[in-house]
Length: 365
Image (cartoon, rainbow, N blue to C red; front, side, top):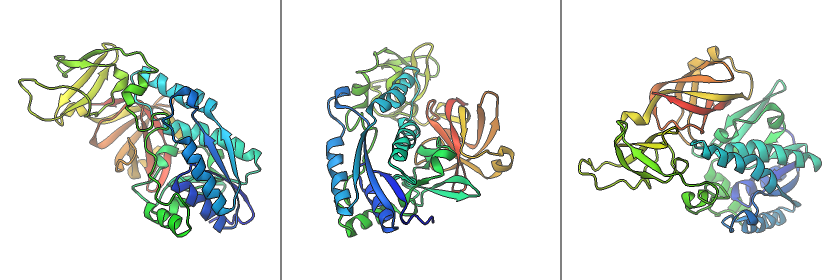
């Protein structure tokens, strides 16, 4: 563990328990801690589903308890241009984006990093459940100790420059321990509910929100053989593997099993659905693009140990990576995987080390 006594550490304060405890732990280690509250969404974009004002008050209260300064910065323009516009454009293409991945790359470890440097930062810190190991001038991203909370999946696009002076103070703790530390040290966020989803969507209905930004383009819901079973509202409003909200019912030949989205046919504007856990929901592999390696990877050497996640909180699955042209890769799984979703990320691991990842382009049946 680095000796950070007297070092200036700029910590992102979200108003939640994780960043609160991160700041506390840094101060306990003798750092010169400054908090920063980032505003990433303007009310003018929307009608106030974000909890920014409440979160700011909580961040201010925690910083007052800890006796550290809190800076405020507005990254809403950056967020809209670099994250939200990408989110909408990707949905238009019929894909399912993960804005949290891009937010970490473009906001928390770019715009925020630049701002921290202006404040004289020696280190940047956040409340992510992840760890960084530094060896021989290189930084390695590691999973957090709490397997249920590990957030390395969302951080795979970070590079050496972003990681080398980054601290993840709570990465060595279980979530229950983090809450106990907050309670023991009278931080008001000790029992605050974890934020879920994307700030600009909040707790509301996803389809209703997206309809404000995307035109609806209804089409047919079809079986794999082409038989029409219902109508969809627009391909952007559905994701592979989705079960809820399909509105299919009353068929005479129904087995009573739930319906799932199996695929999308963008050219025909068709949503392909199946009833029950059918083979169409699975793929033996996938093609991914825009491969990002945190450190250069010898795929031939690492393949025998390689595992991957195709979604957050999925258990690691064994696979093999075959590099292709134009920064694409072919991934073969040892067992077929369910709901491989174009637009999402596949993230690779060698044990606890997060190696990097890529954007899923299509599944291999």
